[in-house]
Image 1: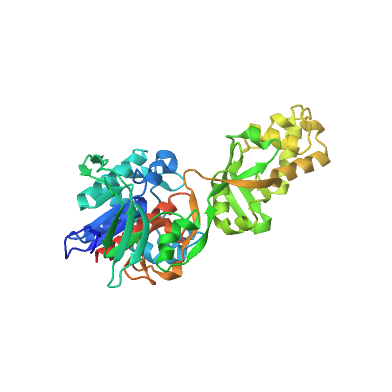
Image 2: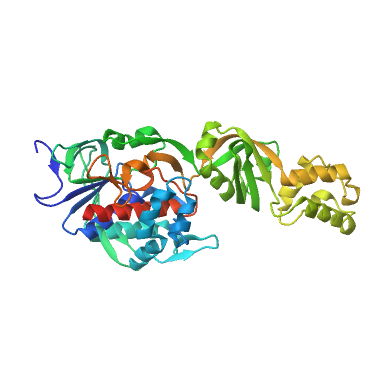
Length: 443
């Protein structure tokens, strides 16, 4: 081997997983459980494993979504849903729930379908994955940055790893059920590693360089662009409403032929919330092509038609004629939002309902159903930070997630050109592709 460091004794199957996130851990555990005699190692370039799991869902970890029909589940993926259907038929959201509960992590379902650990703590999920890896015999290495990978002439791979330092302290883990174990991550001081099978689970390609290991082995990347982001809005009055939410609201981008409905949140920079995030996911490439500068239309009352609004205004004239228009909001609009919409329509603050003329009523109705904002940029959603783009799906066999280009190479998670809406769909893609890859590598 001439200077190479092997990870297993002669005759043992050697498997390396590059990336210590959700997909990488799930794949490594599935592989080690399917092939107890294999030597399975996770290489993580940072100083901590499962970083995104720790911070997702505001620190609660949105594990999956309570949609247990795979055919319906895949409709929540702007890109990659068709490729993901086969894997989901083998390992679905229901299987994810069963997998975690069998290891002591019970999940709960919220009203919008999102599923979280009953502890409301992502640490529960982190501990479960670390403990499961430990029990399965997976080797864990931190600060092991893979610089290059080459396919060997007789099969397998040679991996150049940089890093320095001594073995890290043992990491005690505990599941919600109380089981304990010890995982011993170590650091690699610059070395060559060889393995029989290689899994790349390095996360989303925020920049093309993040997918260079795959490219170096013959793969093509779909250009990465952001998905699931909030909008920066140029508005004189919107920033004063930061923290106000409305539901339901319909948002649309006519220039990109996009439309979504759902909860909306006003931020200091502009607009966010599920409706905006879904709009950005479905329109990731089109909004990128617009350089994130475009008119956005907001219908604050999508369940009301013009006739109902006119009737409501007339009722206000009769029942609250002496009251100021700004002080009598239409339900379900929050009072602060209503006040700003009234003023933005041109109705002055001291106008009473009895004095609201036809022209003013028309302007206010238009403001309610068609407020136009100028979007001037974007902000990535801190809990999701999903990227559209990655390894081209046509180059991957989704029965196993093995490369069609480079035998022995597998993929899992966001490195693939698969991205879902907010709500647990991206984690489910990680669990599913990780499990499929791990089972295949174990075989």
